[in-house]
Image (cartoon, rainbow over all chains, first blue to last red; front, top):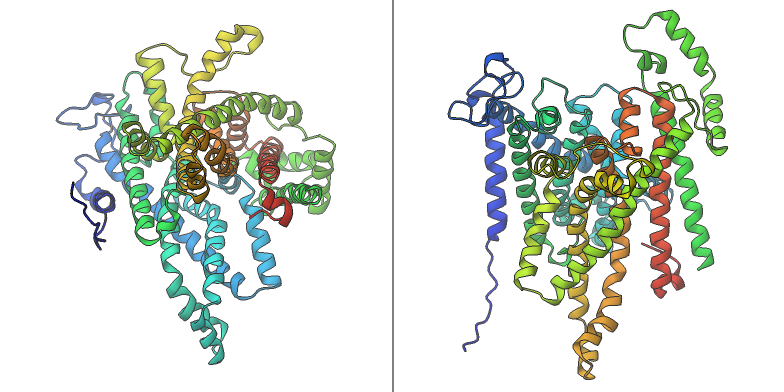
Length: 281
Length: 319
């Protein structure tokens, strides 16, 4: 038996590249979707309703004769917008809050972190429902609601990272040079805080898509005749026995997207921060 | 220990109070009148004025808040706007049915998740471990509402073994009729969570197996079975408690979705009904009760963790 020594490779893991390719392909299809749909996604064609998948209608037709493949394509951007848009909101709000809390110990930190503790002690879906319950539903509101749900987690991560960095020598040096809070946070802390934040962000996107599409499924997202995938699945329920393809097509696409996004998130985590391996949520 | 428990209990009380303020504020401070929201855009001014008078919506906000809050303290959730009966009993009945669903699920998740995690860790790299790891990727990423559709399609429509939706009370359908309606919702709820728990147990068990105290135990010549059971397992299971508490939160989210799909008359379906029909007392009460359940589950997990982990008992802080 020959002993081989593992040589550390600086290559992207294969799962990460696979995930990135799938997410990229879905993003591309979502971007050009409106121009390549074979049929008008909202056009009724009552004569050809509830047709099974065939050469003319790849994913079949729904109860109004709309082409399911066209609708799935036209709806692809919603899930991506929900995932990435909501995560961007939680980053944009949570990271500054976390950095501020870390820098200004004392009452600022006290207020921010007690608020975070409070929000975290509510189940996420409930927080989303509460925000959406009292206003007219729509895509933008769902994105904002999901984004706000994940703000506390981002704040916590950002604060923890910043607290570690604030103890470093280069921050001490900046303080000694007489730099202000803004300069230190923006130029010294933030550039060094990215790796753990990217990891958290990448993992968060999966949950943002899950929560956003679940809220849409419950009727608290985009409204008919929109073709958001969660909404399409909800609308397919009365036809589940005669035309299961109406719900299966968007559902399988959503699963593919979620698995790919999750694989990318975990791949990034293993790449950037191997210590966190095996930690879910 | 006593001081720690008292402090945690106090924070639960604070969270619940803050939630009442938050729910009340969001419902009453958002632009647009509450009466308008309930009656819709075609309501006459007279109808709006009547409803505002009936609900006391013209009183100052702090008076309205106090009326609602003091009612809650006395166990009175107000009158449901759509059912013509007090909201309290509606909420308690729904909570009872949801508790059955959640209780069965969390017990299954704990048993199966921990067992699968330990099995994976002890037989690391085996075929079952690889299968479980692959399954975890899959189950964590598939949305609950899509699972519901898949299991209904498979077990109710194609195989016809189980009812797709509904609920039969124990008294009417007997144990069999009652259980038949639970199988599909419970299996939808637990799959993702079992994957989550087993994954964390696997990694903490692996960490324990590779630790020095396990090495020491092996070096003493103890049989592997004893090493795993006495030395590795207790340390590996501690994080599982925290994970299970987190999972109660995910479970609550799942229950909202699963009850809606399976038409199971629990708290989640009631909440969606209340939101759809703008039944504010029912909605606000339901949210407070769900928050309370979640807060108490977390409290129980923290206390259990503290009892089992002496480090927290001494320093008195749980991160």
